[in-house]
Image 1 (tube, rainbow, N blue to C red):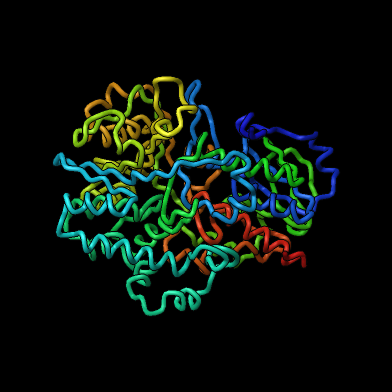
Image 2: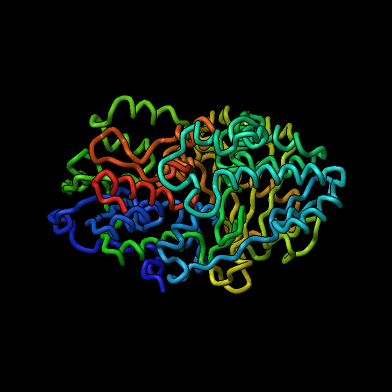
Amino acid sequence: MSATAAVLGKIGLPAPLKKIAAQRWDAIIVGAGHNGLACATYLARAGKRVLVLESRERVGGACTIEEPFPGVRMSPCAYLAGLLHPLVVEELGLPSRGFSWTPAVNGLFVPFPDGSSIQLWDDDAQCEAEVRRFAPQDVAGWHGMNDVVRRLRDALRPAGKHDVWIGDAPSQEELEQRIAGDAEARSLLFDWSMAEFVERYLTDERLQSAYLGQGVIGTNASPFDAGTASIRFHHASGRLGGMPGMWGYVKGGMGMVSFYFCDAAREAGATVATGVSVARIVPGEGVLLESGERIHAPVVISNADPVRTLRMLDTAADATWAGNVRAVPIEGCTVKLNVLLHELPNFHARPGTLQAHHYGQINTPLTKAEWKVGHAAAREGKLPEHLWCELYFQSVHDASVVPDGMHTMSVFAQYVPYRFAAGTWDVHRDAVRDLALASIGRFCSNMDTAVAAVQTLGPPDIEQKVGLTGGHIFQGECLPAYMWSKRLTARTPMPGVYLCGAATHPGGSVIGINGRNAAMAVLRDAGDAQ
């Protein structure tokens, strides 16, 4: 049993702050998100005296477990595993700690307003049969669309040590060499909008719209904006469990990943303390706490987002680096609903409250016009007529997270404003909740009676709850202009100051390799590289 999970990440102080401050530390990690905990584990295993400080009451950041309703355990922000790096899973011994996941092989179910629907299975043969039934003229194009994703994944992220996610970000030249001669792969990585991507390979407009949301997940951009197809690739590039592109449900909830990381860090000798807020990062010296204590260490690694890190550095920040931080868009556009259900949604297109589609993910699609109008409305501080929603049902795979007879539904939806043109989120939160449920309900027969309770988290709520500036789930945009060698690096110009969060290579999601990459940079710079 995970010691961290036993207290749902609320591990508190291992000793009085004065005693902690009096000790000598080699490295302080600011923030106990999953990347910070991974970084701590690798440094502690290398013999470093490591202190992890978390301002909130529990570890895990955006990947944790809470009880939003009595007897219900849910991850408030992170829902599925897919990009969690196999190397980190292996090196931190996650399976031996209890890590178990159920691949969502049933893929993506999409109902349409005309009553039709498609189940995009992760099994190629099953999915081809669905496409052949739904849009037979697009079978060849569907194969071509999947093939370019596979080619790019195999070129950049082959299984093993040649995966470009491991270590420092590859240069543009290195990326070009990997995909030399494959113009489609290059366009997917750098250029295409998600609309261009699907329209290149598919002709059926419903089938095109079924995929559009996969190019803007967590991204404050329209699927018609250049580079959004790369978001689709990013989310399809994982190899968790040796299953390329697969996503799945972690037993106990996504926050178990962070809890296992915390177990590994403490087992390795790192000290983790929650409820401790850092006011200042002092390069080369350590940190100053909000409570007034100074804790000394020659190295500080920030798992906080770069804007919060910049604020903690204050006047000690390098001016050029500060400009680079401010240049990355970090205003979120997603709303997350954690929902307790009496029963699962009953979709008009495929009736029933425990069907094959409930075991995968479900999208409520938008037309191309609705995508454009919706993004524009949110940019203007207004709500659109409909939200694109992606639904996940942890309880279908794992009944331990919910009371008998009930279900959980996690909803990831966009676009919503970070700031409303008129009124605050406190004023509009109920309207956003109702809009999200209505956007789902137009495809279902039972949403009015199925919903028992709802927690609604808009971008400012995510910012306040998790500490992510702008409520941006990836610590800044992951479009091509901000990825690879253009992403912030683990090393900063400030002496002894590093970053280890999603703002660094290889980007956002629950990955863990960001933390490992930062730890390896610290060890190399100290002459302790393994």
